[in-house]
Image (cartoon, rainbow, N blue to C red; front, side, top):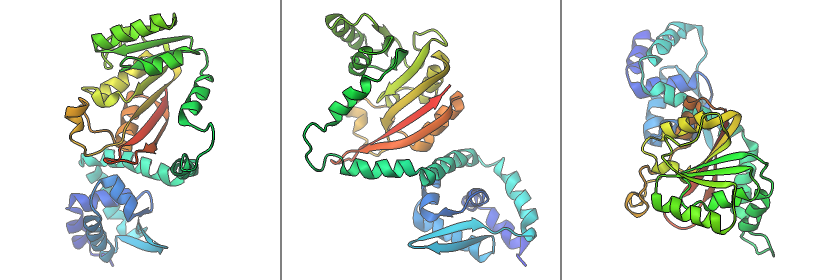
Length: 307
């Protein structure tokens, strides 16, 4: 019989409580738990050992991994009620569930694993004509006739590529020099469907419900309030319109603040998932799409969603 008193003592620790909240829904490996909670392995393993000794969780080994799950027992019914009640008082609980969703999607997304493996091989061996630049231009030709907002566009290199096929492209940036320079390039290259507008990502000068696609390409980490920028993108999109956010994965390269005027040191997959969910997007997908070979090994994450 599990000691109720001992179990209550264990639940008094917030980390152990967060672990039980995660394991009540899914069997997880230590690596997955690390990713969700953002804690070190030794700390997590120590708490799991205490929960296992108390008979609250069970473990199983699969190859090199050990998976943990909540013990399903009628004797724990009272404790489950306490865990549920405590979750409503735990500030981290909601974010943990978002991070859990991302971790589980990683596990199940076989297509992602395939492309992760492919990305590591692409370019290692020479193949005439095979370049990312060529692939990008091929894909740009498939852009349908739609209205696109490029938020935080800078001088608008991406906007100009899209304008070759799109119905209209609106490039928004808060730098007068960037807008002036981009407008000059658009005029020089004869893009009558490309318009540069001075404005903020968080309040783009674009009417509500007027855009088919909103892009934030390596721009969100410059936003004073990233959540507000994502919500603003949702506001200008038509129903069924899409958002695509391409940005840096969270990193520790502090020099980026001085070198590149970055306000944020990237974003975790859970951050982007939460931003899009809170803005009202659905069919959300978040995935890491590249990793630089040279230090500090910046990684790029892509997040998409539908209004």
